[in-house]
Length: 441
Ligand SMILES: [Cu+2]
View 1: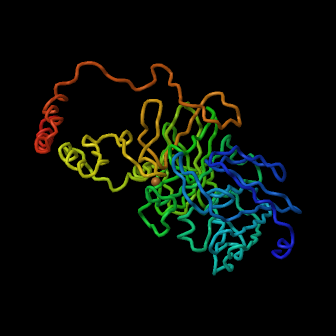
View 2: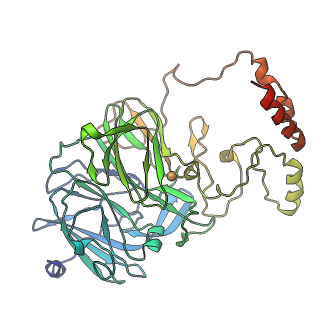
View 3: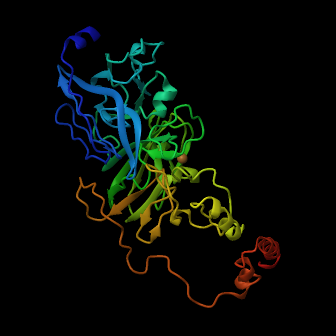
């Protein structure tokens, strides 16, 4: 089979220049299905050749915009990292051409799929590695519907740390099985890019500083735009080195799919946060009942920060004014890190070029104080079926928003010594805080 494929001409290997979410790619031929929307990504077009769906991935160095203001030198496929999503239908015969334009060998492992052992893509174990300049062909039948990933199984630590991965969706034969109105997919990934530099450190095991959905950090991540009343699915795969509890606001969802496939309706369980372990995939589903801009993010606070947010000392309760003035004589750019818990999002800090501030998202009411693995599910009434354009900020109906209370404060809130706390002498603050813990309840 392989030799026949090699004798044929190579299919096109389209390139994507934009890091923005591309519209779903409706199947022009083959069996019908409801295409997915890849968050800040795209779907790879294919050609049909004698009843076989042919795709062409090109492994190559790419420049990926992580968010406006920061680009990274990554490795990916067909112009982007992650690579394009591959969509097929259960039972499809698939032929995947993989051309290696990297400076080292690679392979493609189809994570989670049932396939012949020799198509599993583990360099050294199931095939020789694909050397630079060479093209390999993978052929198998997409047996099991579900959510999958692809990534190299060759020099994995380096190649995954450089962004080599992509999503794979096998749609069910019956397009009405578990039908939804909007079906999103993305990967969790992470990079260690020293502030001011462009290329990830590839030996990092724990200290990643750029936490991303599909190689984008907030505010560079597009919102997931949804029409009120829609049944929504979000498929998420984790190819980082840690787990991510992914949390949706305002709606409970059910875990509808795992690595092993679809969860039967009767066995699905409700959650508002689902932990996605390393190497796992989850599909969550919910009814978009309530309009709004609903936060959707990893619940590890350090994963909603960008570079420069890590290793910052805790300065709460420490009066640094005198110290800062002295240091500033030596280091003109020295800044004070919030001694009242302060908003790091608003801090003006001179950043090296090509570096994202720790938390930069701006909402309609001020700084969102998050970066990294954060975006919003934007639910609106009356959107067109295929409209994924950012609708702007949600207009909250009058009388439905939190508001400031302007009556008389309780005496116990004023005392004891709130004034002393803002007197800002280190010693005084310590004394007052001890006192306050006795007297304020
Ligand atoms: Cu996380």
